[in-house]
Amino acid sequence: MANFKGIFKVSGVDGQCIQYAQGDIVYKKGEAYIAERAPDICKSPEHTSSGWKPLVSEGTGTTVTFFNSITAPSRVSQGDEWWDPSTAKLYKYIIDTNSEQWVQIY
Image (cartoon, rainbow, N blue to C red; front, side):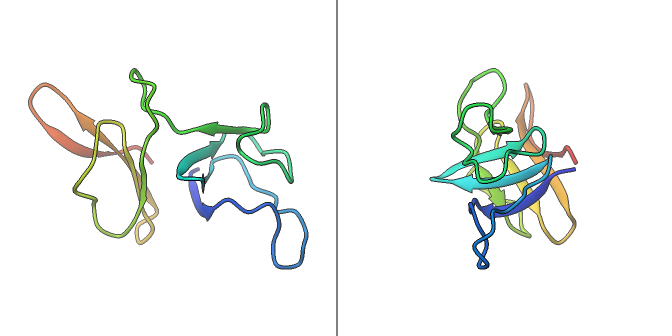
């Protein structure tokens, strides 16, 4: 289950490391990451084998732009993803031979 957590933080206001869960999505330095498993606590998404994976567009290898809004973004590229927090649904932007559209993936 995808769960948008916003900007990645190592620790909370109490100073304790934040424990993210499998499926959590975070931003760090303009890049979006998804937790493939429960990530290692206190490990940034850039750490090798930390449990985080960059969201990339399949086939092109380019980084996916991840949107978090209640309205569909309009300036998008193939593979971009949009999380609608009002419905808790995740969409991917697909361009096929005769159309361009947001397709619900979760």
